[in-house]
Amino acid sequence: MRLVVDLNRCQGYAQCAFLAPDVFTMHGEEALMYDPGADEARREQVMRAASACPVQAILVDQVDAPGTPERPIALERAGTDGR
Image (cartoon, rainbow, N blue to C red; front, side, top):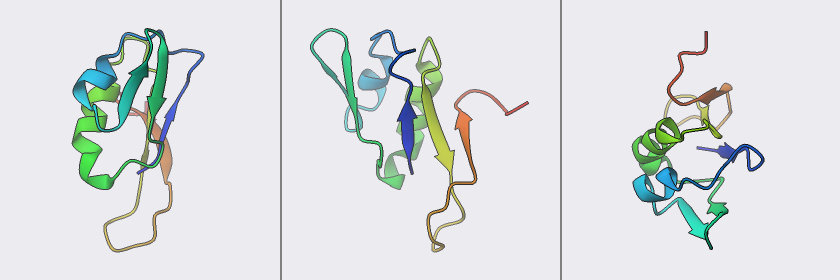
């Protein structure tokens, strides 16, 4: 899984760090640190964290089925259906 956080959009609300602390951490009061190549096992936590972001700054990729090479199909904003 690959993540992208729009750090210009991020306002440091830290909802992501609360919901997926193994992937997102706050450095100080405003700087977000995150693992852009988070383990696929954390997908559910990451999607919840992305959905909880008040400014929708977190994008998560969609990949092919397990067992196939990781290849981004599209970046999706969590909480939307892409329409």
